[in-house]
Length: 252
Image (cartoon, rainbow, N blue to C red):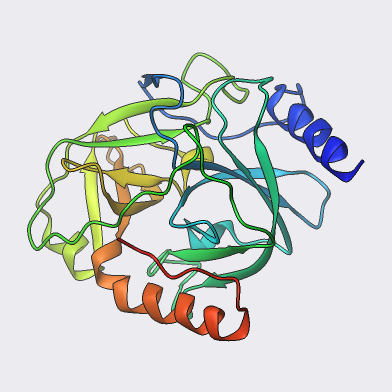
């Protein structure tokens, strides 16, 4: 009975109710169905009763990574999705949230968070974790994905979309432990928390925020640099493992 209720909730979430507003992948295209099995839709239950959405990605059967500014009192994650409605999606409540303790809600510095699932994700052809990248230089050939609307609609996309982004060599971004891209194409609000996936198919960044300069210059998109936080990720998962026997530590 509970499983049927959860699936009914998921269909409602992804059925593009006219009341649901979200962000967008700007200039993107539909991803090949289930070609990104690590992608997670994060639903935030807010105090005003209006759901909000972020992206996320699966690290292992117990943990999802997202952006710290996507934190909420109650969060559900939806794993294995591409199109709505769809069968065999796994809706899982989040048991604990671990936003980075140094996250700054004003500057979006350290905008990274781990979500501990209340039950294990079941791996199959549509559900797989993604490894984390460790790059000393600037990654090449990167892509971001999400269910945010495109620039032709004000509502949520029915399908997972993706867009290529080119990272820029910017000292200010590096000093803030971010990667950055610039241009009219890229992620926006509803896609935050999703992964920046680069040349070797690993996640190098967490989509954080976008800034539109007052000068009218192209927007700048920011991605929290995961390699800077690897020790934090490992220690956070290890501490959760100590308090819960079922958690699996596997980042590679």
